Image (cartoon, rainbow, N blue to C red):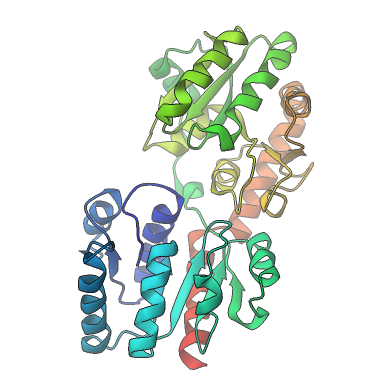
Length: 353
C-alpha cells in the first residue's frame, strides 16, 4: 500500500519491489490512491493494482476494501509506504491482526511510527541513518530492520554519450557533470551552479546537466543563479526523463550535493552505470558513497564541491577506477534481487513472530 501514485522515490521503490517479489514467486497486489504513474506501470507489468482514495470519506472505503481482501485472500503481510498509508495500515492491523511492515523512506517525526512498533509489526529503515533516527525517538531496536534500496540500472546495455549530447544540443567535446533528481532547493543545484563558476575556469569543457522535474516556484531562482554565474550556455535542464541509464552513460561524473538524503538512490544508480560520484557528507550518503573509493564526499560548500569536481575531471584514471569500484559495490549490495531477498526475510520474521 502506497499513499501516492506519482513518480518519486517511494513510488519507484514500490514498483521495483513488487516486480522483485513477483519474480521470487510471491503473490503481490498493490493499493494506491488513484490514477497516476504507479498504477499504470504496475498494470503494464501484470501486477494486480487497486485504486482507492485515502482521504476524507475515501478512508472508510479503503479500510473496508482492505479488511475484505485480507480475510478473503488470507493475506500474510501488508507493507505500507508513506505516512498516510502507515496510519491505514496501523488501523488494519488492529482490526485483522495481520502483520504490518512499514517502510520509512524519509526523516519523519510523525508518531504513527512509534505506534506501529507493537506485536509482530516491523519498521523498515532505508538506511542505518534512518534506523538510528527511529531508535533515537524511542522505538525499540527489535522492531526496526534496515533494507537498502536496490537498482537494476546495471542490467541495461551501455549507450553512446554522443547521442544524448546531440539530442540535448550540447557540443560533443564537452564533458557532462550531471545531477539526477528533482530541481529544488534541497537537492543542491544552487550550490553546484556556484561551484561550476570555479570549475569552468580550469575545465572550460565542463557542462552541467540537471535531469528531473523543476519545481515551478524554484524556477525563477535557479534561472537567476545560472545567469548570475554566466553559465547560460553551460547548463541544460532536461526535465523528467524515462531513460535515466542513458543519461548517466553520457555523464563524465555524477553529483549529489544534497542538503539531506535518507538514502541516495541517485548515487547507486550512477554507480551502477560506472560513474564516480561527488556527494555531500549528509544523512545516509556516507553509507552509499565510499570516500576516495567510489567518489568523493564533501561538505555542502561550493568551494569544496568545486574542488572535488575539478579533481575528478583532472584525473581520468582515478575517476574511472572509482566508477568501476562503484559498479562492483552495487552488484554486491544494491541490486533489486538483494533488496527483494532482504524484504522476504523481514516478511518471514513478521509472520512467524
